[in-house]
Image 1 (cartoon, one colour):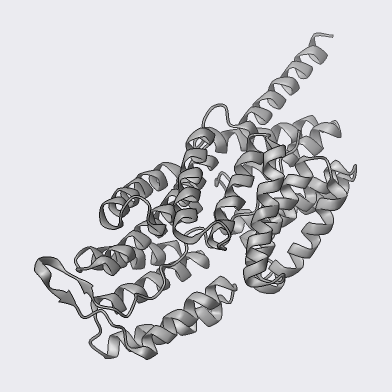
Image 2 (cartoon, helix red, strand yellow):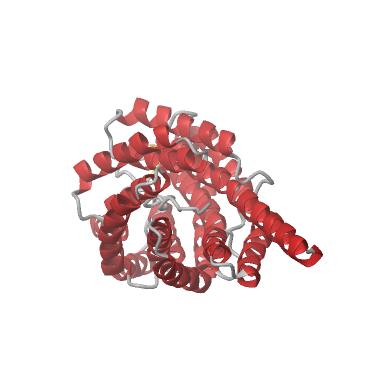
Amino acid sequence: MTRSEPQAPPLAAPPSPPASPQASAGPAGATEPDQLPADLTALLASCVDQRARGDFAGAARSADAAWASVASAAPSALGRINTLLIRGLLAGDVGDYGAARCLLGQAAATAASAAGRNAARLEVGAMTALGSLHRARGDYAAAQTQLQAALDRAEAAVGPDAPEVAAVLNELGMVLRYAGRFDDAAACYERARRALERELGPSHPELATIHHNLAGLAQARGDLAAAEPAARHAVALREDALGPDHPAVAADRGVLAAVLLARGLPAEAAALLRSILTVFERTYGPEHHEVAVVLHNLGTASQAAGQPGQAAELLTRSLAIKERVLGPDHPELAATLCNLGAIQHEAGHTAAATGYYSRASRILRATVQADHPTLRICEDALAALAAAEESSVSC
């Protein structure tokens, strides 16, 4: 059995927007002068928009200009926090995890020492982004610890049903899903969905990320009847807001393609994946992690269509990108290794198949639950290969 991958949702840890220009109440009836200068507000808003469109170079220029503005003046704490936060998010986007951790930690610490609701919102945003950073590096235990702390802070600072709480719950749900804790992930997603629907209404584009993740979770659980409508709803919500060519819409189409592939529709999935690949290569370049996920699913589609040579080529390219971007032991490599193992297994190349399955199993055993579906596939395949080898020796 082969494994397709749901495309990661766009902006899984979205930046908090620039702080509202109204003053917020501080302790003992004081007020914090948190109105940001117009030029800084414009730079931060431009940076958030450029990042959402995948224009990381443009976003970095806007962030550098914002930082220069903060450094040359005496802004409120919120100006510094906002700028540290967006710079940290951008560092994470390009894989500079050391810089990202430092900047986001500074943002969280600065926000914790500031007064007012806006500072609390930004503190939660920075803590959530730190959790997302741990997830991106494959450290699910650290991510869960960080996100639980963010959830506790959010609930205390802004209330249990605020959008900031929903953002933390969404990110925590992703971590739990990747770790194989599907029931806990579902509870997080459902609570986030209810909170956002109460606050924003059921048709708001922010709900697209939740439906995207619900689709990915349902696919991981094998509930394709629930996965497809959730994926299509995510695409519809985001496309209505952003248009058909936005990279965030392409990411939502990616989870739909993974569901179609799991439903046994490789031709329809492959057509969708090729259009997504065009958007992602144009937006992010050919060596980006999102490109690797699409290549994995295209390889899986080729495998399902009876084209093992083409499948192996696409999966090998996906694996090479993931190794460069994520490192050799990241749990996201496992599904690609598993599928490469299946191709070699079907071709009768026992040693190569054993190598791929064993590497995937070793990676997953360190990070996921014992009943994780990809881990079960690999270990069942290894058992079958070992039994076949023993049988051939005894004969």
